[in-house]
Amino acid sequence: MISVLYLVLGFVLLVKGADFFVDGSSAIAKRLGIPSLIIGLTIVAFGTSAPEAAVSITASLTGQNEIAVGNVIGSNIFNLLFIVGLCAMIRPLSVHKSILNRDFPLSILGAGVLVICGLDVFFNEGSVNVVSRVEGLLLLCFFIVFIYATSMAALSDKQAAETGTDVLSWPKSFLYLGSGLIGVVAGGQLVVSGASDLALMLGLGKDLIALTIVAIGTSLPELVTSFVATRKGESDIAMGNVIGSNVFNIFFILGMSATVAPLTITNNTFIDLGVLIAGSIIAFIFSRKGTINKNSGIVMLLMYAAYTAYLIMR
Image (cartoon, rainbow, N blue to C red):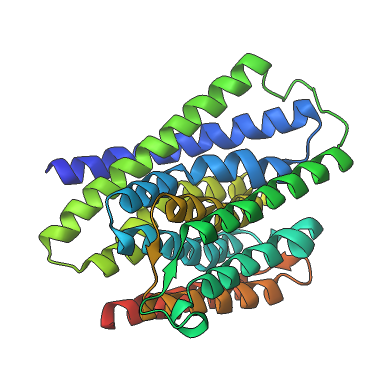
């Protein structure tokens, strides 16, 4: 009963928190004259990725490699195929040029770099594939490059501030942003806790829990935030949130996790990374015309369903 209560309370916090979070971040973007895309790629993406960071870094500290790595890869696949697919079915998603030219390729590069970092048996004739502390620092360097490029884009693409009556005041904007962030993070943690307890009671394996229950649970903030943003017509926040979160997850979260303690990469992990790279390339192709339409969204959802079925059979 406590696990079910955690789930219900977590979903309530996620829905209301995401609503406040999108309103607050949009208002701040307008008042500062910063495009909503930049807010989506930074503040919103980082805030909604807080559950993944907490789970993976904690798992790394306690030697739970399967959860640390599986959580991030599973979250990224869920973000890309399920969240974007679902949002595209609700309303066609416009894809900003900077996402196509900079952020999308960087997210694909991140998965590719992780594959190369983990191929110790192939390159160094090691006995096990590991993402070392040095390679973790390399991932963090890529993350710094991403932050720098995003900041430069914000400075060069500043738009006129919109301070009309429909824009929240400064105190209210920060109140909405802060309370929304607390809501989505706390809600995500409650859902993960409740779902994980129920899954363990049913006797599910740790790999499956990490790639599905934990990954989906920690991605619920991204799901709800992008869903609400899409309904409000804020496609830039919806797409920026997903792509920004994926970049953040690999470069920052796995970078920090590997720096704390080297991460073991299994053969199944390489398969999951292959699915992530393939899904990213297909989503990139779908978005080349500047919009991800409903039909593309359906294909992406079917891809995620097929991947989940494969995980269960595996």
